[in-house]
Image 1 (cartoon, each protein chain N blue to C red):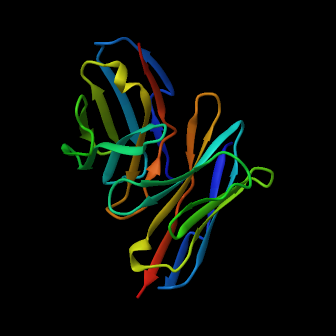
Image 2 (image 1 turned 120 degrees about the horizontal axis):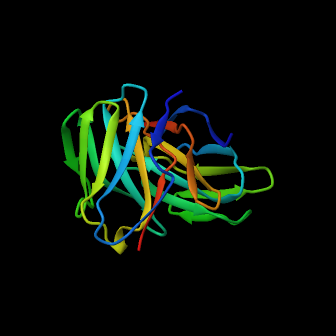
Length: 112
Length: 111
């Protein structure tokens, strides 16, 4: 069974704080993704990575950065959190392009 | 343990056929069920269902939820090759609104 884990289920941060969200997958998948899910908007892709140290911007990368130093770990960084970044953040991984994406349980971030 | 099961896992049809994709779930404190279509990159949102028996429609796609029997179906009529994708079902559960995704159904529509 593929397992995708996210470091926190809930986070509460203050405006301006630096926030790290971590995602780990245990199936040697090449691709990893970070999304945010907001009511009425569905999943929006922030960044994805297709290999170690490789990253590509998704649809809404502004205000975010990512890091993939090891194949199994993909981190999402909010350099200076803002209230409009309050959301549910979902991480996913897939073996290769076009294969099923396996999702983690999500991290609910509240920025005050 | 919360889980979402989808069936079939893989399906091959010809253009014009009608397909029904199934999603059953066991979660505590159900809040909503979502369907997504996954092609190359990001899954695209199709439907969100929260109430039993109310069909949601969008063109050739429709979906309905049965909260008593704990399942949902996604129907696609008059399939086209562009419908070829992986269809993901996800259930949002708990006060924290955690997501539980199913394994997906890979649909291939042949010309």
